[in-house]
Length: 93
Image (tube, rainbow, N blue to C red; front, top):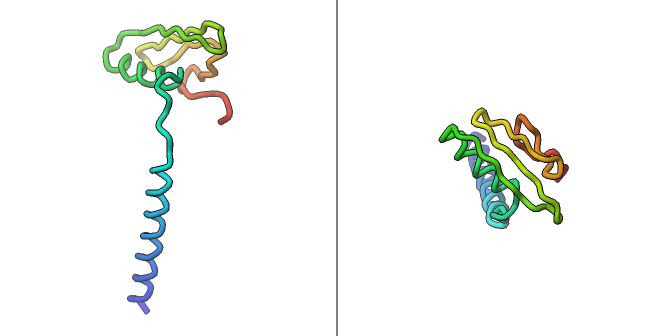
């Protein structure tokens, strides 16, 4: 009975791994021109250097600013929909 259980567990794990691999292949990379992607990349740089950065975007024809502080907080216009403390989008996906 134990060997049979082991074979079933290995088969289930193999099936799960194959489904996860196929799902990862179909995932699209983030758009490099998306403001959230630019802010995330700049956040890494700001945290590494300790120098604040201010970014300017045009969203739907309107200018928007985002300031990234060395403590990791992000002050951004509401049109960008960014939470100040987490840096995550406040808009539903």
